[in-house]
Image 1 (cartoon, helix red, strand yellow):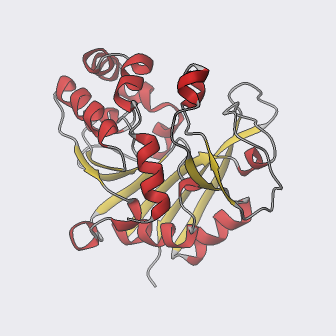
Image 2 (image 1 turned 60 degrees about the vertical axis):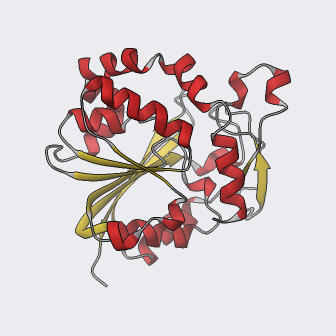
Length: 253
């Protein structure tokens, strides 16, 4: 595992289980919400899936299973790939309470077992801010392509690159030159929810943020056919771009 992956793993295993219980509820309570309205729990992402039943989905950096469990309830065969054992514990407890099967692999995304999972999935899906954890976007996209069957689909939703130059999403991360290729240390996503004394002790993550062109060009050069690039407004200011979603199909090389 690479040094920066080890660093990010340390950050994402810092009180993560306790955080999810506090923010999302006890696993049984979360499962009840997922069962009540699984499509609603997917939010805007539901519109990017053609169907669910029997579809093999790789949920990349799937965290606490907030989207994986609803997908499983809807009939998909979901495998979560994530770096945190604490995230796995919470997700599997929610899945058990919802009485659905969830496969959860704790690993560095760049070291996924492609002998087992290569050309296996119908859909690769990620959301909630993933790309900035990887320092080489071309390597990352190449692995995403390798996971998919021929004609498989990638749904990649992430923070809009404009968040490089302004804290549009109020994540309390530093702004920088839009064209910067700098790798930098910053707080993990939910550090801002902790008291200052705990927050100062939390391990930092290692980030590399990308421009719009870097992301789109990497998708294309890695062997995907780009189908759509949708921009979504920021959570608290609909006049600003906050997130985007790319849909792309695996292309035969």
